Image (cartoon, rainbow, N blue to C red; front, side, top):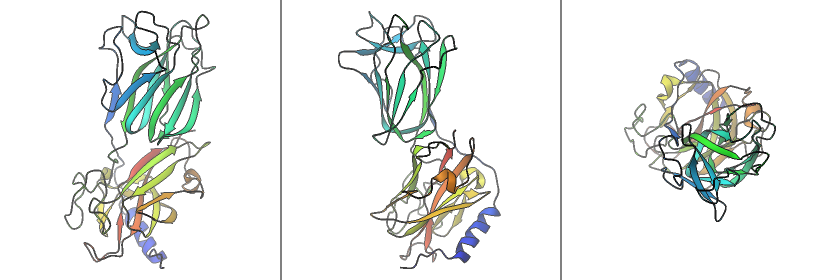
Length: 330
């Protein structure tokens, strides 16, 4: 089977991108959960769309502190707060860019572990042990994790050494829709005017809703588990591509049967054959930060350039997924 990505065509693709070094930009709607406007003692369960708070059987989550900043703790009842029990958050859709604050009650030595689940599987544990020295509020940054579906806050040190750890001001982004190169009319129009499903790229011969790209795992230089996942593809080869800038702030230009948004320094990461309409990278190959030569603090953008040989739209035989952006952490 021919791969369909000759060096001449790849060179043309990279040349097109390099000639379009325009503004960088991407956006997702941030969700912020604040407890400031809830009365002390309010039970916290599923008041927030897409997020459910729970705890160990027999315990409840409730708002503490009569004055702002108010925060949540878990205990036997609002009348007997302890902030020493486990707290769980389940997200209806995967989230990224997760931040919140740890609030310690009686000392400057917060102790707790965060078990982070990505797409339902445990992806890592982050500990606050030894993170003392702050008098009240400790920011917790879990933005290196992509596709978080559950967060467990466990192993909280109990009184009398510490009065427990509460949680304040959660913020995150739902991962849908992807942030750029969409075929839903929010960016540049698809080549044949066949705009359909929100959040995906332009339609292809396999899916009238187009193909989408998402990220899952940990974008960490020292613990890189990041995986790029493309869905709704023809069963054909595709080239995963990285760029360090976006064309038109992510609106892109038409190319083939779709639109492309990557520009700047372009890196061809690897070719993967789709099966069952899905492919992923790296799938055991070189980690993405190595293949893409990414460093701490780098913002990188990704798309899949895939072959679509069936007669469809223009005479071209290729298309693009929607895109996703990742910041690389230590």
